[in-house]
Each structure stands twice: as C-alpha cells, then as structure tokens.
Length: 335
Ligand SMILES: Cc1cc2nc3c(=O)[nH]c(=O)nc-3n(C[C@H](O)[C@H](O)[C@H](O)COP(=O)(O)O)c2cc1C
Image (cartoon, rainbow, N blue to C red; front, top):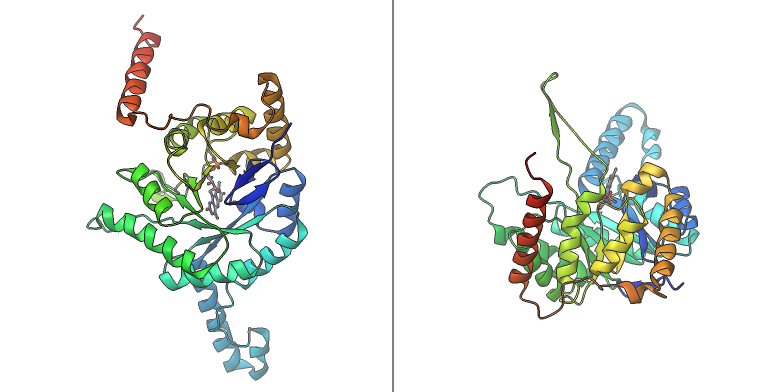
C-alpha cells in the first residue's frame, strides 16, 4: 500500500500530520508522534505576545536583581532586550528536527509585521522544513472592514514569503464572507499551502461565578464538514497544497478528507484524546480501508469526491442544499 504523499513540496511517508498542539511541546513528544508513524509534525505556535511577556519579565527580573546583587545579572541573558523569548522554541525546534526523520514544521502566531518576519527567519534557521502561519485574528474593532481583514492575511503572507526560502502555509479561519476568494488570493500571493480551518478559542460564561472562562474543547467529527466542503471546492482550483484540520477522530475521517481532495490530514484532538499512538490506528485503518476498496495509493483516492473543475459551483451547492433539506425533512417527519 503506497501511503506516500507530497505536501508543500515536501515528500511525506503518509498524509497523517500531527497538527500544532501541546503534544509537540517537548522533543520527547515530537519523537512519540514520529514513532507512531505520522508523516510530519507541526510544532505548537510561537506566540509573539508570549515572547514579549517573557522578555518583559526577564528585563524586570534583571533590573530587580541588579539592584540587590551586582552578580544577579549573571542569572539572566546578557542582554535582556535582545529577545531571548523565542530561544526556548527555537532550541526545541532544532533538537526536534534532529531527533526525528519526518519534517518538522514551525508555527508562528505573530502580532506585528516585524514579529512575523523575524520569527519566520529564525524558525527557518533553526531547521524547520516549512512554516505555518497561524493567523488568529479576531477584528474586535467593529469598524474594521472585511477587505482590511483579508488584506492583513495577504500582507502577512507576502512579508513572510519575502523573508524565508522554506515553504509557507497559511492556517485560515472559516470566518470570511467568501472563504473561497480569500483562499484564491492567498494562493495567488504565493502560499505554498492552505490549512483549513483553524478552530478559535471561544470563551464561555459561567453564570454562577459570573466569570468569562476560557474553553478549549476537543473537536468532534461533525465539525469536519465545513473544512471538507471547502477543500472539495478548492481542490482543483488552487496551486497550493491543501491541509485538512478539524474533526478527525478515526480512519474514516482521514479517508473522507482525502476523498474531498486534501493533500494531508492533520489531527490534534484525536491524538490528545487517545495519545500519540492513535496515529498508528489512523494509518492502519486508512490502509485497511484502501485495501478493501481496491486503492493502491493515496493518489488514487485524493479528490475522487471533489467538486469537479468547471462545475457551476453556486448551482452545485444549491443542489446539495436542496437535496439535504429534502432528505432531512423526510427523516424528521412528525409522528
Ligand atoms: C490544546 C490545543 C492547543 C492548540 N495549540 C495550537 C497552536 O499552538 N497553534 C495552532 O496553530 N493551532 C493550535 N491548535 C489547533 C489545532 O492545531 C487544530 O488546528 C485544531 O484543534 C483542529 O483540529 P482537531 O479537530 O484535530 O483538534 C491547538 C488545539 C488544541 C486542542
């Protein structure tokens, strides 16, 4: 069975990729994911705010220490202003890339133009096979226009592409008026890959404590329908690789994303829920399914159920919607 695939121009042994999550917080974690068989590992994101907070804390400690003991400064980086924050991330990346024989992809969540580019450069130098831009932007200012939000994505991509030579993927949210056009613009601007879709943290409210509480829920397979729909539409329309993320729980979810046209299928929730060894379950199950269906390679499967090029997409979507509603009405008849 040939599970080999290509993603961002990289040759992968199979299409199951560990997406950014705390499982890749340590070299050991990355090694466990690789040992379980994944085709590549995306490291958790380097968050610019976190780096800045750490820098500020280092500077504060250095200052406080210097007032008490002259030698205290030796406990801190020689130049606290010289951005020691990413050091831990870059060191992890360097060691992880050396420890495993699958590509390790760095991930950035920046806030400033300089942050995106300088961290991208540093991540490339640390040995990342590629870079994923985790653009987690919620336009809290209600006056921000949709076009401004879109342009921000394109600008970030273009700046990073100018700064590095390794492939660059953009991890997108689904929250655009026209997610398809956004994808096409990023493709034209040179994205090597599109990762569909990021899941945003949506805080909850506790009515007892009257507090806003952070909520990081793991996903369920039903959530895969939205990214799968867009992958099936974009599959034959963009040059960029397509990575699916959200809602993989079992091998069937991997197969469905491949049928829709994904080049790779990422998973975080299932690996967190069941442990890194679950990657082996996904891969064995995928190979079993392919054997049962008579497919010899991932290339035979990919895009079989994508929206065919040249289809009138509006009509296609409308027809699907009308059929789905008719079936739903039939299935939910009143007693
Ligand atoms: C606990 C947790 C931490 C995550 N951290 C990151 C991160 O650092 N960077 C990122 O781009 N995505 C992060 N994600 C998002 C995942 O990479 C993934 O895109 C998302 O969870 C959808 O995939 P899933 O349904 O397989 O979980 C995180 C997800 C979880 C559950």
